[in-house]
Image 1 (cartoon, rainbow, N blue to C red):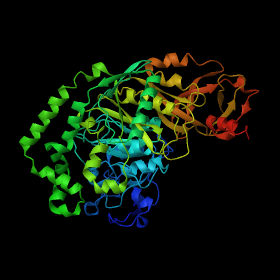
Image 2: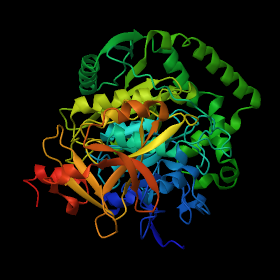
Image 3: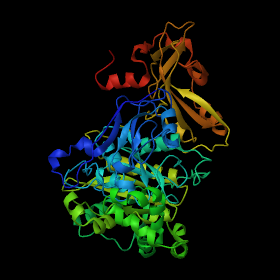
Image 4: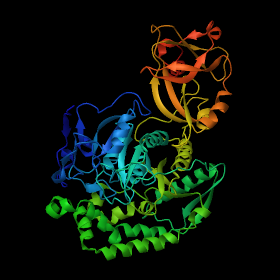
Length: 579
């Protein structure tokens, strides 16, 4: 298949704003048709975009530098996995050139605006990826995170930014910024969607030198937990942000958190090493061949930052690494005193105009609470917290040790539920509490079960699955052999699924969940007559264990097959009754 696509034209940094439409700012290239490998999988029905330093087969990778642009012959491993899991790719998004920046203004394709106020920065470097999620153009997107690029744009645009443990998502096919600390990051409007994407994409990749086999913690924080807050909080003069963080602390305490003050000094010192030491040489190494031949093709201040890496010796790099280890040792006892760190995602908002006038200083300020995370091999999750009095978003970040990703997601989902904010810059709100299924060990024996009614995601009995460590494998449909009925006198309401002898009936929506075998017995014991477990035939001809119903219970039940599934039927009741 040969793709036809459009690509944005470069924009002069000082061009009048009227020549720079929002679509040009956010997107760099888009195929004429979404890229898809199939309709079935855990991400079926979801659309996404990727930052334009991540390869997509038959689309150019520009890294926001037209002179660097090259056609990708194959997709990055993470892109391929998400497509295999049913997601549809809509295009590639704008970024700070070569992923060097936290503000979104350093691009040959124009500055990406904030989704709430176009005069303000979006945050970067994954600027376009955050913008298209915040404005509802896609369900999720991929960014990259080296110094906070997967978190700062989330905090400034009222969305979720998940920076996974390093090595959990493959970076093969991703243009490095600083390869030893780079992570592919995930933007979504809810923690639940971001977590689904992480589960779908996580896999050890033998061809990625920094990929790791990680066993994620599945022990939740519980009713009481300790969260660390810096003793020294810096707001760069933004009093509204300081007020919103006080509200955020109170909310986390209401969820069971106990505040513990921590010394932020070593964390701030580690953050300074990222650009203020020989560690910046890795930025130069990432694009050395191109930079040595085409230095003038690179925008300022990206050019000066990368060029600075040329001046360090190998001895300087080792010296910086030793300093990093020395500072890290001061934090060895941190996780004995707290379960998570809790910080503002970004301390303030800046205008595009001010950022261009003071690009180094203000960019550094945006990374005040993010730069240390990757260097210390931590996981992090930025979640929306509030809308300030001036109408701008304020986000907070939960930080934990390597492999704490599920712990952060579970707490982050509870925090987002309690915040009750609109999703991104849309007028949508969460309809049900989020379900964050713990990951299943790859070597554990499992069984798949198809659910059709009250156990579906967001439904009343879904917790019976998630409490047993089940994870959503796919959203699909049965073969056209079935009829669906609404059973009488069941609490909560439940459907009954009946198989017919031929294919003249209906195809019904189901979800397939994978559960540790050791918990399957306790799950089945909760199923009361007239429901039971049998074998279902799916639309692709495969079979799976799933819910069925005894025929005698359907004699006086209401047939609802024409809705195509239980979720649509329940929605019809909310809207005024079955049709």
